[in-house]
Image (cartoon, rainbow, N blue to C red; front, top):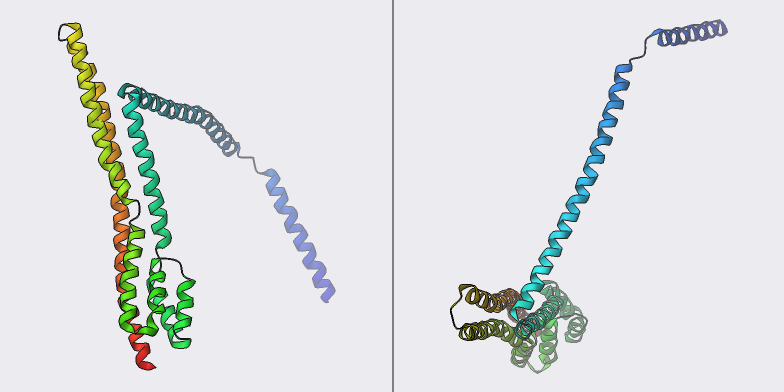
Length: 277
């Protein structure tokens, strides 16, 4: 009986599959959907073909604008005079070089004072002054250097350690403020050179008027325009360097505040450690 039921079930399944295939062959094919897919593909191809030249043209236009801007800057540089414009360019290069050097130095000098204080405190509790000095020796930055100097004098008393922190903190502040005077010098020199170039250009314009014998509006306007290029350039350079200078000052202020706060915390740790001993 089981074999009979299985045979009947197989026959029913075969007949059902044959009927489905027959219905599928008898139904007409919907060509509209196929045509719509083909039309959409053709439209996408045409749109892509149109967009590619547009993208290429926009890139060429941007490159042309950049080339024109470069030519304009070069022309204005030549019009302003090679001597003064060259001096202004040197001010910008040296000022930016010093500013970038200071920014890199200050970023490397920045440390996580809370983490350092935690390590120093655990070292004081576990291994004493020598272990805390080892932690400071392995840590980079002015805060760690100040801590090391204070811990080195901790055996002489808390007052000696505090004086060492104050004196070495002044040394570290000097290192942080290194080359700032040169940056401020370039900030001051750039507008002065620009004004000097303007005055000399005005003198040259009046000489041309005197040699011509009459006042020509075109001659005066051309001379004044060329003379004012140096002033504009000097002011732009001063603004750029001033932004970097203020950023450097803010970084130094943050580091100094961190040094002072952490030094006070270190003195408290030393007092606590000595009381425990």
